[in-house]
Image (cartoon, rainbow, N blue to C red; front, side, top):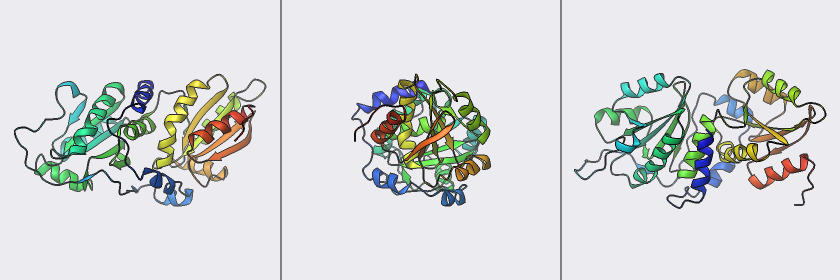
Length: 303
């Protein structure tokens, strides 16, 4: 996913489509308590976000631009629930990003080029397109998936829906793909208590690096928001700092580890030096996070 991070940098200077207003409120609300999140492990939290349009049938005209062809061949257009389910099964454990769109939707047309670009740079992620007003079959698929407004993006792993968004811009879409599909960055992916203990042991003793453990949840807006910063820092600070990530709701071992670490809000960044926990930062503020990392690396920081 290194190319995804590079694409994120390109998007930072783009004005093609900004993220929707109101996302900061959504992010603030998502610093969720772990027990509540655990109870909702199999649910999907949805939020009303501006910039979407009601999904519904719209007559296609001869001037409509067809998606999923030509230069966007990595975006697969599906036409029925059977094709959709088959694509999810074929992906196995790869991330699948689905855009639910409509031919009359200007917002769908604006965000689609971003998805095409991501499909070219993220070879280990599958991208699907569902045109909700194409036929009765695609309308039924949208109803089954609970789609009421477009453009709507759903993210699947192992046929399970892990995240969904409406009314987002290129930066947030790229950030979501990076967060849910990242396997190749310099951030160490941890899946159990044993993984954490091995990483800590590896960097214990004289000359050991500071370990920054990013603890989050799969369905956490602020966790997604701050993750591109974590990826960039993992490269720029590689000489002094090791960055690792654990999603507490990935399995029971991870959730037990979060409870033992007394993590009650996410994202929480735990700072570990020479095998000891020396501090933590709770939140998604980029400047504050960088400041804390520098401080625990022995750099004097004045706020």
